[in-house]
Image (cartoon, rainbow over all chains, first blue to last red; front, top):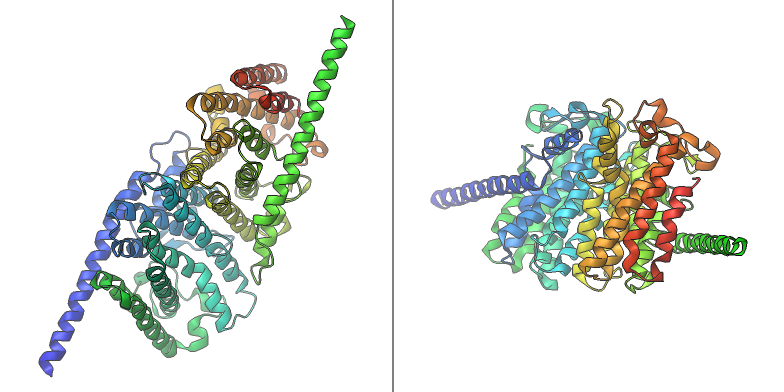
Amino acid sequence: MVARQRRLRILAETATLALEKALRDTARDVEEVLEMVLPADGGHEARLFDSMRYATLGGGKRFRPFLVVQSAALFSVSRSSALRVAAAVELVHCYSLVHDDLPAMDDDDLRRGQPTVHKQFDEATAILAGDALLTLAFEVLADPRTHENGSVRAELVAALSKAAGAHGMVGGQMLDLAAETIELDMGGITRLQRLKTGALIAFSCEAGAILGRASTEPREALRGYAHDLGLTFQIADDLLDVEGTIEETGKAVGKDADAGKATFVSILGVERAREQARLLANQAVEHLAIFDDTADPLREAANFVVERKS
Amino acid sequence: MVARQRRLRILAETATLALEKALRDTARDVEEVLEMVLPADGGHEARLFDSMRYATLGGGKRFRPFLVVQSAALFSVSRSSALRVAAAVELVHCYSLVHDDLPAMDDDDLRRGQPTVHKQFDEATAILAGDALLTLAFEVLADPRTHENGSVRAELVAALSKAAGAHGMVGGQMLDLAAETIELDMGGITRLQRLKTGALIAFSCEAGAILGRASTEPREALRGYAHDLGLTFQIADDLLDVEGTIEETGKAVGKDADAGKATFVSILGVERAREQARLLANQAVEHLAIFDDTADPLREAANFVVERKS
């Protein structure tokens, strides 16, 4: 019995180590692609290029890129294709952080332990840097180096634009701003999350299926996984906002409570929120039953999200 | 002799009337497409959708859409394809106006005679509306309804993202902000214009060639036309800033001089600037020599740009 428990613990630890290595590898590789696609050496517009690089390079868990790379691996997509799509998703994610941090929005001074873009540069530069990062994401996707088939490239653009736009991430941010003055219930918060963070996470998981021209069944499976993973991710984020420290998260904490915003934690309480996150993580893993052990990193990622400290 | 002059005048007046009708027709048709692709009827994010519609519908010359539709007509592209690309270009143009008008940027209160988006709504909503309009432009291009061939759709996305991004329009806006503190010479101002307004005008002219899968020669011709037209357009804009009234232009005038910014007019003077614009307009028309009279509206547009009053 003790031997079995010990074996299970070692297995779990091995899986966590493998996941951490996979995350680090993706982060390193996607950083290389970002470094390549980001503009450099401008004349009088150098400030724009510098701010774009500042907002994007040298930091972040690169969790969305990890999801792209791992979902692509399920369909034997070339790693270089996957990494370019991963870079595009990260560009969209980083642009959204730059704009969300602006004084007119969440007015944040810190991000990943560093001054936010408008603090390090200025507000106008931050607005333009975000605009240019978003635009660059579509340029990267539409480039023939991302996939040899034009329809696949166009499908990637279509899916990312839907996920990032008014019916996706931007709509979610608008809801989030509205949440400061209106009282959202569980349904409202779930919808907010599904738009604000869920849509981009869903695209990250679906991207591999698009690149691999996968059939309906695995696409649906990944969509189900992404849906539950996205919710898990947001509940974990709300828990961090309550329990995390500024040192761990590299950003201001306790902001939701200060703003009087309803969150999963304010409605469910810490214990039930954590329970709910664990439940959803397990549910996410169940969607992956049709895949072999190539999907293990995605399975492991669901646990990682629940336990994350930053 | 008098009879010949009279005939020429009538011909010129007929051409102007035809151009004005073509502009009105395009404006009406592209408005219909915009109406269709813009989001409506949101829940708590209705404010976002309203601001996107406010920024885009019911106004503007729709000059870029006109260029798309006319360049597409050269290659017998279906009008519905052309109008969708025209709508995408207009979405990008309108997003750029919303963000450029923000307090942190040009800080303008009026646009097309109406309060700017951040005045009518608020700053956060204006930032998000711009983000969502830009994203929507790529969604429209990537949609199979825009063109049946995926490679054509991907090429449109690639070309528009390059024109709109850090090495295009956004880079130009950054240069424009820098121009408040650095002194630009003619080369610098020409480069600023080429990026800030020229790149999107060039895409508008090139879009028809992409849609029509045109060969190199007509593409080059359109590129040459667009280059000269873009410069003409900017010089005319600088002239309007000096000579126009707020009633004619629907926006604040005299801003460049107030900001101490170098423009074509401040360097060349009014007379030489107007002369230069006429020269460039003629040069633009010469590029179109390889086309038959299908290109007449584009030829006429070059004159229209020089003479425009708003």
